[in-house]
Length: 182
Image (spheres, rainbow, N blue to C red):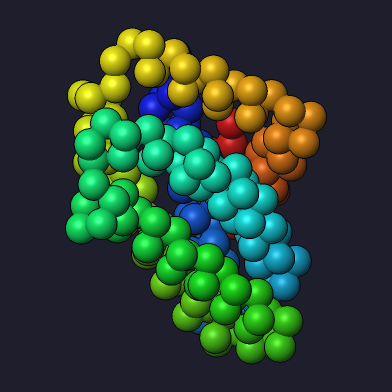
């Protein structure tokens, strides 16, 4: 196992929820009542898993290592990824605000924007940034990064986050028929 495999596995879980969020929004746009509980579950997943776990590992561990190896932040792929993380956080805040205000149409618009952003973002990481990482990190750096990820993921708090995230993804898949349960 290498640290990039850890991040790409997390991407696959995030994509499962993106598929469900997209279907939830599509059903609502076609006239169904907004599933407030499903929407809240998707927001909870994004905040606790996609952002506080996955993006934290990238921002606090991977990106600084890549910068030390010469990958530029400003004007480079790291800066783009960080900017997109912030755009995602803003879209989630807007989804949450719209949900709280009972604004179904606005929720759907922000949800679809988030889904589109994250799908594109994940593609860039998988196809560009992670390939760069694979090409420039030596075996020792990979082992050290994997050890950092393992310590982070192995905390009681993060183990609980993963269990909840997986359960939320499975719950949303049952409701929206998207993805394949793990």
